Image (tube, rainbow, N blue to C red; front, side):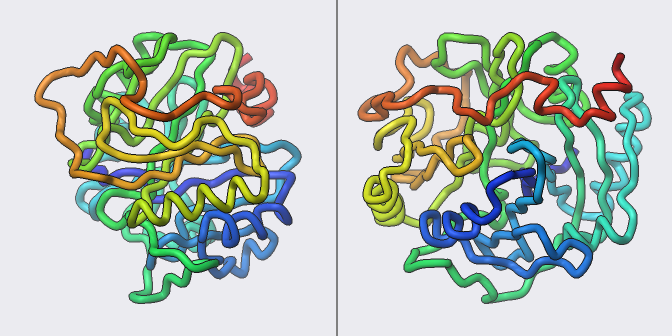
Length: 313
């Protein structure tokens, strides 16, 4: 599938008021216009797209959906044929849902774990419309997508990798340097970074471990780091550089309990001419000062939709 990367992500949250402050004043997100059909949700911009992150009122803080961007209508139609051939169940988004997401067309489907995904093309945008919520140098998205996400899966079987590699068309990057079983995957058209999504094996657990967002400069990382420390927000890892990516980053926890990795590139990604097997997670820094799994990681019963759970029983 000709997928650029993650176009947008949606979350349910019990902490909309906290996000209304945290998004612009800590992360520098711009506040986007909420659709008329969804006035109670909060939409954030990091570039000229209508939005990249949406937070909807909910009874529990959890990931609601991941939106993958097909490069265009022909790629979208090819993907539908591939899903049909592979026996993947999907539903088409109606006009109201497409308007909420700001896209021409979309479909909804689930991965073998149960996470909700969407595939779309042609999200609305307005040139020079992004205004950061605070003094900020901006974010790097556009052709590389909104960022990456790491989710926890209670089971890690061959059907998951088959779905990601043979159906979604993702490239396998590797297992990383973690102690547990983890798989990193990159969309077909991503030539900028090692992964768009990773699944970490956590028996009996599900949820978002962290979301990675790329900013324009190391200064943006440093200023965000200072704000996080000044507000005494909980952190997962201090400033550092991973072994597998030539980037500087740090991790702190959001109001919803998952971490955000704020990233700046110090040199272009080196590509993957062979599968790396790092002995250590980072070459410097990244001291672990908080839990690796925040309160966003719960039981499957807490994270999955009740209707979906009932359908699997």
